[in-house]
Length: 252
Image (cartoon, rainbow, N blue to C red):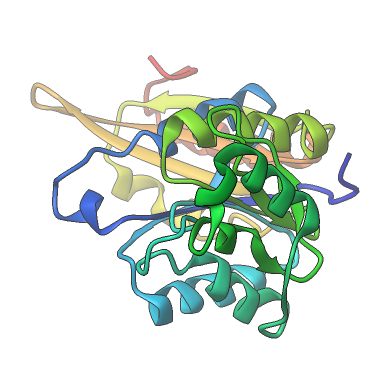
């Protein structure tokens, strides 16, 4: 299991065919559901075209976060537009790559003589890469530093890899998050002065809604310390009561 505390999860979905409407994405929803089951949430999701420089920019952005855990989907095949392995090496291993012997063996066993000259390149991975099992055709995905996971663009292959990665390294979030929520029957603008005073170590979520002609706002406060969560939440409750603004606890 990873020793990373409160990781920030990112997903990068590479596929021009998603952006031009030729295919629909299935990766985001699957990963999101699996993270939520384990008590994690995503910090960001990127859906980008097959552009090596842009891919590198995104990888570099993510690795600036010391708590980043990234799942990347697509671009690890053998065709000329499969850039992910090379770009990952540029971003994470100073462009150093090697032919992973186990990956080579798996590819040769799967395809025989047809492994050469192209399919074998799928074993050319960033230095230090470890493998993720491919339940469909045995051509593995890979990961680096137990934090950066690279899977195929096919959900039938990538989903099993996601589960393997999470079960091996991020099975459960052991850090509890305390959250309190209320629904106030007022406009969001009324609460903005208090919102500005919420400390940076507290998560604030504000969702305005209109029902008929009435405005309401669902306010949610979360923190890793229960007393901090309660103190901030209570300031909103006290304000609403002093201003005689109706509210109910929870999201209704």
